[in-house]
Image (cartoon, rainbow, N blue to C red):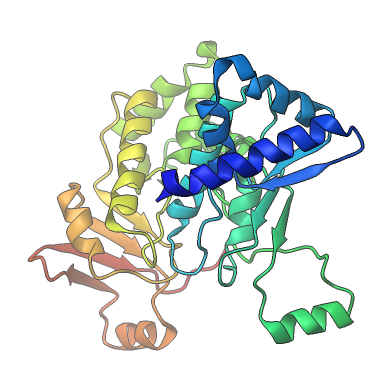
Length: 335
């Protein structure tokens, strides 16, 4: 159990603390925060352990890496599991050592393999580097031979929630939404469809009160010239995310939309054009959440060709839960 291991962890951390205080030339690097925070919070107040640890961190002689409560698995855990491990570590570290900075280096030496999405997730969480270990033997030999054990680890997924921070992308999102708003107001014959609500709500809530952006957007929605589809804060993944992750994304979108545009109706059409594949449970989940239709895109090429040939790009998408939803599949889509 965690508590049983923490007994040995307490001995190790105490020995490290004493050794560093005895000899100013010594330095030490700690990975993860589970046992460190347990040691700090369980120590007697008279020992002033938190202050002593924070002093060593400030002096640069004790470095806390990782930031995750533990090093989370990357092979089978859904993305929210990876994020949750780091968020729990951030909370625990903040509670135990409120004056210590949060780590910038992640510590993933124990997972059996590494996921292609990991660098994007870590960058989103504020890390600028990561320590790895369990790379396949042949790959590690080649990396050693080519002197590439230190490298830039990139991700193929350039999205609003991964590759950069939400706030950073919101800068461009504000420009787009402002341009759309002005264009619609300039020409009454124009219409526009927005997918998801993450950047729309950010634009509305961050705008100056004198601009009356919420009222202007709600007026366009009421006139039927601006349609907000999706309803999810973003388009959630369907391949690895558990059902509660899919539901959470839509519930967060509903909350954000209600706060930003209280007079605008919640969308009836879901917007799932970005997920890499679609889950059989999705129509039941969406129907349960009140949607009557959904827009899809990333259907396997051969399936889409067949659907096009059979004129079935618009179809009833059913599930084993006796629920169905109207699904429209993009014929051709490019960004």
